[in-house]
Image 1: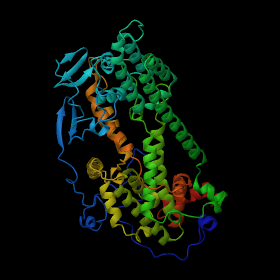
Image 2: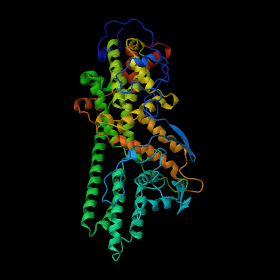
Image 3: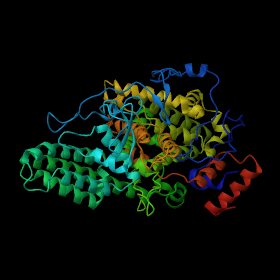
Image 4: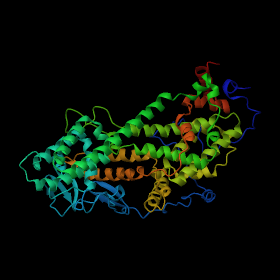
Length: 571
């Protein structure tokens, strides 16, 4: 008997296929939903190693637990256990004048333990409110750490410290409060407000202050959406630039760069808001305008490699707009030494991070929708095999986030229960992909592949080899557990800076990856389809799944009847 959903929207299926055995390893009884904090890949591990040999086209197809990585050594550092790896190569960056400190790329900022070993001169264990061990800064009072950030005539903080403190300080105070303190220290201590101060001294300190402000505006530009930040910035740069043409040009260049970044962010957020406001459930669109959705993703893009390239465009664009501070602000809690407020009792500024999470979920639901839509079983099987090929190409590119979203979509219950469809699918390649993203042993296989991609990026001879797009929810989880597992403050009230070295190391690696420009040609039609085509809601997915392959038990039958009644108004 023809189902109401199929007869009304999708046409008739020619004949009924014979009953097939269920696909091994799929658990149709478990309801799973694609979210950033859930892994929907199969929990099973691949026992038959011969399947891996069937797939040799991947850059990483020969991965074993020891490939693409130097040996990891677990070594204790204070209360933290950190992973030791080979440090990245150190490079030099642009600086204002010959005497200014080098600005290495993010990949070179931290050594194997998360510290910069050249940061500090030999010092006593306690120095001016800062506590060191083996020349590494482990803790300090908040005031001493702020003081350590501010340049003097004879001192400029290493970029590693600047990044780490600017990232972590927002757990204790607003950025505008920190900026106010920095401005005060610069103005008062260096006598910038004194008209009779030594001009030669000002000429020595001004480039260093300007360099610090440049570091701040380039790495954490979103802090300056706050008018209080901009006021302090303008005040301090005005004092620096007065009377010096060279400094005026540098200030103007820094300010223009900041304004461009903030304008680009505003434009990006407007586009996201427009996409979000026009998104509707696919079933609703089918009921009102069935002619508006007459093609599937294979019609829009028949080549899996091209689709993987366009997915990579979306991933890198959205990654690029995530500020490093969003990883910290996502987990901001009340400071135990602040009885009045949390640092972010206003609004957690994590919009771009959340938009990226929503993209992962959308892609998972898009995959499930495209699989559940076709009327014929062979077309559904073809769609599954298409997405397996897309996932494989994502893996080869180094786009692990799209890879995991596709796997998640194919493992959603409305898809995994389609046993007759899966029986027609050649699953060897999919099994290998699932094996690489297997969550067992804390995603050991994936982490090994990620290190391989990161190493390839470091030694890349082309822009394509530089691409590393991590499985984002796992990155967030790692940062979350680091934040939850270690206190922000020590019993004596000191800031636990040892924790923040490791936090900064993880975030700085992400910063390196997100700065890669996508080398693939953009296809606007495919991008438009991926970003705007309506997808099924969870209930609509289940209904489409039941219409494709009928309910197998009383629970499914009851749910099917309920969904037909609520979504279609039919019994």
